[in-house]
Length: 279
Ligand SMILES: C[S@@+](CC[C@H](N)C(=O)[O-])C[C@H]1O[C@@H](n2cnc3c(N)ncnc32)[C@H](O)[C@@H]1O
Image (cartoon, rainbow, N blue to C red; front, top):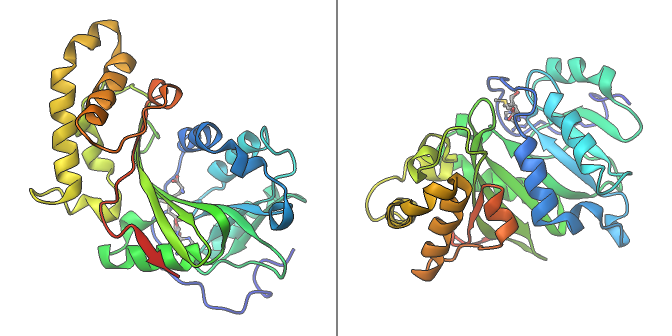
């Protein structure tokens, strides 16, 4: 497939550092498989060949190829499209393309071919290098390509993928609905809600100030963690889960599905910004 000439539109966005790492985004894949496996596996109507897009995969296409392997456990014919704004990174990736896995130059305006549809877009460690005011606009641009019911996953991780915080946005008919802010840890760095601060996504990182929803939420979580510290004796996972249950008891809209909490995923369902975005 010629990855350059077919797409005449100028890619929206800007080239940024391409740092990535093996297994860095494993927890995003695992979370998707737990949280919404049906979205990966569904094949009804326009979902039949709907692809999974990894936008901004970096200097090497490792995370895209790893996700293709993992997600095809739920859907063995899942098409995967890696999109990069840097043409050299696409050249590097092309030897790894096959009939289900493609790499193309593009930006937030996805380089789709006629008839192609999209079920999930993942943009990890991309927007942190942009300005805060560009975030919502880029969500809206990407969101227009999703099928109704499709999901945009955008956020930031540490270099190893041990901790990360992700925005989840779901496509409705003519708008994007904010589904929640997902905190993820594999507990390798212990547990304390403050560990997530360095990996807050761009829409939150500059808002850790009193009066902002994200600040108030993290403070409430810190209080909940102090209140439940006795659970630490049974392990960090139990402590993490107990702190989430305390938040829920105190009226915070957090998902308390045991399987998510045990795996170190806390989904806060309020929106730190607008909860409905027009497309
Ligand atoms: C830090 S790397 C992230 C790599 C990988 N996603 C990860 O998390 O390990 C960011 C990549 O996003 C690319 N990028 C930035 N803006 C983009 C855009 N609008 N469209 C496509 N790629 C973009 C950059 O060229 C860079 O290679």
